[in-house]
Image 1 (tube, rainbow, N blue to C red):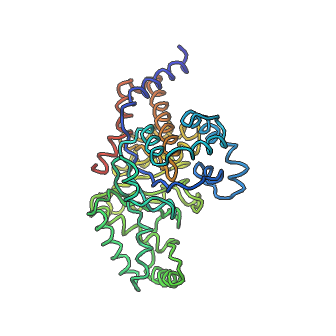
Image 2: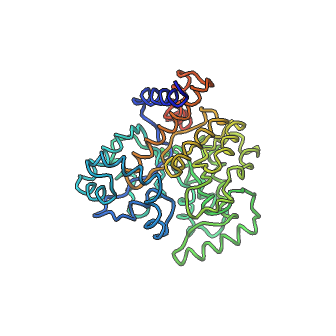
Image 3: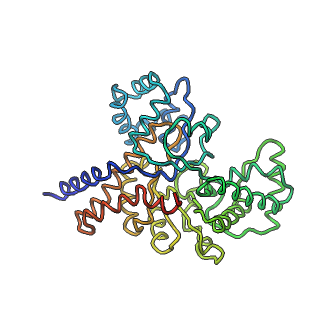
Length: 388
């Protein structure tokens, strides 16, 4: 057989072997409440990081991901593989049943949910648990938590102490990790902030909060919050999730490399901290390096797998060059629509089977080793890391 034939055989065998494995989606967001009618650009927005209507209208449909997902979704609805046909067909179904069916098809066994993303039409924790018969645990987004405490405290020291107490309460209430989106609000080049600057920035934040704006941003406050969250994660024994690379239009990609978190990796007070790098692309090589040398660092490629199309699968292959498979986690980063959960789940499994299958054909791994590595990535690693 040719290399391609051997690779396809190994890939197919791995996918078949993992068909019964219920994945732990360690990084995802809630579904939205079912709208009366989903417009084309609303649908397209779930498969891109773009927010500009011109991009959504003129360019998103001209991407490999979008063309592929139309072909994959058409059989689900029993319709033609066109956007118009799918949008019409999906609204003829009973929403809750349809969502459950697609999540069942995704073979998701547990969801670790960050409810800090999704907007006002996202399901609440209670609504989400009632809608989907899948075990669900919560991730605390520290910036959202901290923003809700600003108006209660005049001094930044008291504010940060309140954040500590709220994180402890959340973890004792069942949350399995803390998450920071510092890369979306400031630089990921973490630096110890000057106290005078922190006081001045906090005073300005409180003034904005009186006008109804409490969006946290800027290095002094965001970095202070990250260090507090990291200390609490060590004390409470839970991982800290850190976004890096692509993921939000607010992020300055030039400042979102995971190499910027060095302080969290080298300072003695964070010696027992476990960090999970989310998204990582296009810094997946840097993330894989950090996983290879620091015992407490883990990674996923989540959103990069669907959004970067075939390049996302290539990134997974490259990450496995350095990242031990005990450090790689399965995640979809899906949100809002059940279609995104299904497509992202399928592409995650296919990318993993392709990467490990290639290692089998090149005789770096046996088929049994690849099979076990995949099972760890799909579920076992997350169960151990989050003590599920």
